Image (cartoon, rainbow, N blue to C red):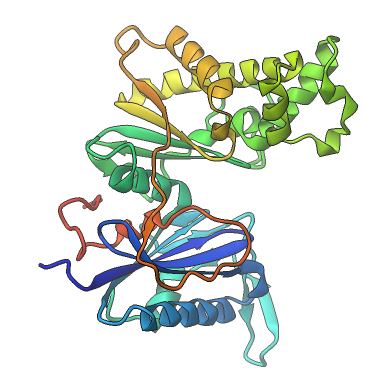
Length: 353
């Protein structure tokens, strides 16, 4: 089948913004729009706004055919097509009398979009899995069949690809590496358990580490001059880059926890590479050097010095110079669109069949 004239819609749903774009099989963006997710708390209203943006983009890309719609969202399940118990996204039902009803915990998102676009495939996936798929399609994992993508943001997400296929498990929710317990009886996690990796190596986790370091280490530090509520991961990285000893110690401890965890993950799927993505990964060698060192120190001898630790190399999608109005901050590219672009690039799209 020819790829000429076919585009996929990618939808990136975040707790703050929703971004919608048109992309082709070469990664060229043909249009991009963004709106505030929270402006549409009723699911039906949100779907209406989303559909309007899709139609605007399609009208501004004449001569192209819609191949499918791919959605990346927190807590999305590829198998069920649902967004399940999302923490940072609140949508409500609309009652028959038009009033706002109960909060929805199981959101049939694919079904809702599919009613608007019944003739094209619509799929949804966890946003961390979508990140990994984008790495495989357009980034540093091109040509790799086995790798892990770790997203270090406000939490920790992960996508695991083994033998060229995304690992979903029996019901679509496998690969939650951020919720592997790395410290028994450790920090309280939002999932309800204690000691999860996310509580140590996320943007929030490194702040907790910095506060502990300041409490236990009496060396002078510029961190002490800042109100605890104003300390964030970016500030810690800036101070560490300037040589602040406690900020450097914070990254040392963070790299230790992450490196130990990665060494354990390697033993499960033996990836060719592990990619780090997200705000905390932007700290560069401040994070990579201790993480790599502790990963190798704790690696089973079978895997020592054989697994690459790399920054994400997903390139920003090229643009065809079409519609690009935006709202809010720049969001991640539409890597999740390739998930459903079977008509665009059948030989490369990851399958779970």
